[in-house]
Image 1 (cartoon, rainbow over the protein chains, first blue to last red):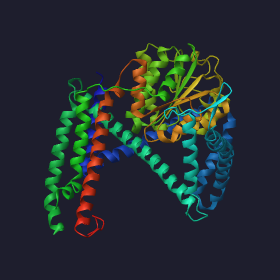
Image 2 (spheres, each protein chain N blue to C red):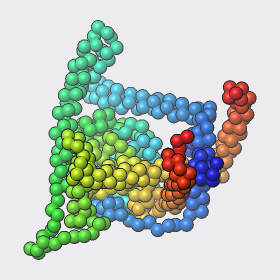
Image 3 (cartoon, one colour):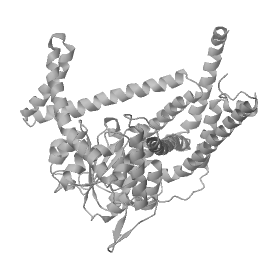
Length: 250
Length: 285
């Protein structure tokens, strides 16, 4: 096994265990791992951005291939830095205006088309189907395209819209519709929460799978050694902190 | 203090320990619970199966290491399937922090399947702009990515023969942990350049993507570790996702039991208070 893999296993194991110590209590080991995470993430982003944007997308095409047209976007981008010069701050507005204008122009029609028109189109589905010239009604709850699901979707959409309709008081039939909307909302929140729990558990499973793998002898059993080190570190930290903490509690 | 009151004030670290045990024991001693394949995962698999050999498959790994446990197994399964099916694979990412990881997974699986860089696959790396990158690729792929991750010029690569822009790509799958991701690929890519789009995502964002699936805006969706496990079963190569499914089931069961117990304790306290004639909220002193 290569040295890089071995080192990676030990570092990953140590940092995972340090982060897990937060489940016991906030402590210096957790803070060390947390600060390393933030620092390394930012450092990595700076280096990759410099290499990709400055070197590969600007310097090399201009200097090696003579594509000097890149000076135009470069100049517009550089105007952003004018914000740091009080007298020239106004120049940065040109860059912002360019970004906002182009961004909005590109995004608004596409987003309206994709998320509003297309979704409305999908909501308004036939409530009964024509099969061989005669109307039929499909009852399958597991088939998203069934007529029963089309009705449920329609009721859900209309009732939720009623719930968010504040121009009239929710009384009588409007109240019934709004309360039905709450039911649909609760089901949606429940589904979203269920998926979130699943996702968080998946993250835990991922880290524990790594810790189990790194407990193998071919890695030098970093999980076991570093777990012992972490526990000893936590115990020592707790013992050191206790005499200082007691008088303040009184 | 009654038993129910003591239980509701239990040290949260005991619950952490219970969940930890429920996760680690099935990982150490798997029982192999059955995995049912959902239609949305089958749709992604089926579409790749339907592509003729040599078709161009673009995999956008739009996630960072924070979502690795869920999306990395999806990437592994999809790449294995695409390489086995002799598709030409283009890898890329719209997430800067995931660049190194994306390169690692594509290179490792390609080597495992005996594929050659530049001939059978290419990893384009990351380019700034998110949605602008997709628009740029839709017009001219070589302008968006003049070089690949290894700084080799993309023009002239055998794997990109006949590919000028996104219209020449047979299938795009975005493995996304948020935005920029599947929605961006639909809005700025598929809607305009008319390629088929599938998705893989973390569990957190999956419910928000189901409307796109139902409306046919994406043709399939692999949701979280569960989706990855289903895909591993479909390609007949069980990996980390399948191994994690027992633990997932046990932890979910434990959470359901804890929720039920909490409600039982809460209701019993409320009933006791009402019996004493207080009738107030049990937590109000």
